[in-house]
Length: 221
Ligand code: BG6
Ligand code: MG
Image (cartoon, rainbow, N blue to C red; front, side, top):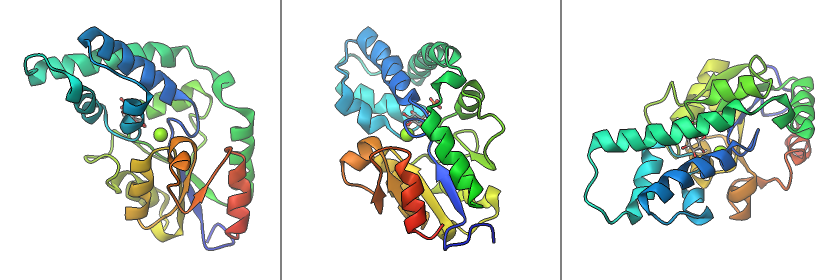
């Protein structure tokens, strides 16, 4: 056993939890929505949290009233969004990692907890490299190793499998309601931050990332 309490690992969502790439997702989709003349705001954007790229496009297109789009055109739109998003990611550096996030991660690791990523993104490894966490996590489960995105538990169950730890001994940290639902479906203890916390989701809620140290201490870690 690694941790001393009932929990041995923490699985983190990436976009909107470890770093603020959720805002870049917003800007990328907003530019595509503007090109299409489709209304797009934070309310629509919050529905995209934790959702795969193509499923996000389908949500945006709910308000599109032009002729039906072919699968080829949809792929083109998703690629355009991703290309613009990747330009923004390319401008990221270790300075984009909040020092309190890094200090909290180090604190949790110092208590013997294993730390993993559970993200729907296919860009997760690139983002982690950009912010200086490329080699940091004990396991990474992301959009490249799943066939169903959140609220399906697959991404978190894979993270637990890669860590070799029982899902019931894992804590999930999420900013997406769909991610909290995925964590619950995986049988994990769920902690919300940001949008999901504002909506009262999860077993515990964080005001700031650093609050996680207290939550884990309360859980006996
Ligand atoms: C999730 C984001 O982490 O990754 C979603 O919350 C995003 O908004 C999804 O759609 C897929 O990301 P990517 O980088 O593969 O397009
Ligand atoms: Mg997120």
